[in-house]
Image (tube, rainbow, N blue to C red; front, side):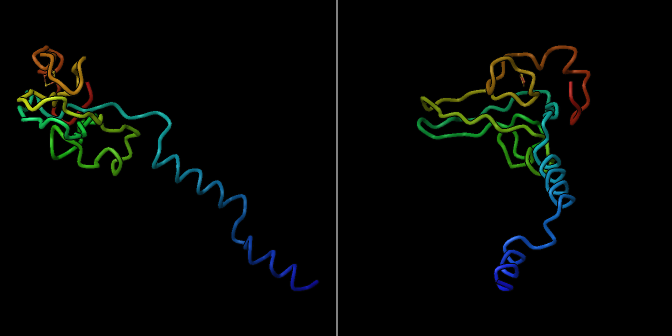
Amino acid sequence: MGSVRGLGKLVRPAAWTLNQRRDITSWLAQWFPKTPAKPVVALKTPIKVELVAGKTYRWCVCGRSKKQPFCDGSHFFKRTGLSPLKFKAQETRMVALCTCKATQKPPYCDGTHKSEQVQKAELGSPL
Ligand code: FES
């Protein structure tokens, strides 16, 4: 009988207390925030790239990537709660991809970067 009690302690060590569960919850909230951060202006002009038909791309939504206009994982490491926009090119062609993150037609530039709001914004700050 004594060994069964001992087994219970092995399965659920005393270290797994209510306080530790709270620690895990706060850790999760830190890495996966419920309210996502706002995208920031990476650049104020679009970047022209050639998309290859059938290839999948991940467009940076958060504006924090150093590989604009594509994702480099910064959204995760900077704990934004945002995710890149994954899309598949239907045809091989040159396109202008948004870097101001204010476009209404993501991932493509729609000219919103010409607006006064974007042009007056500081790089790396939200609109
Ligand atoms: S770069 Fe964002 S709309 Fe043109």
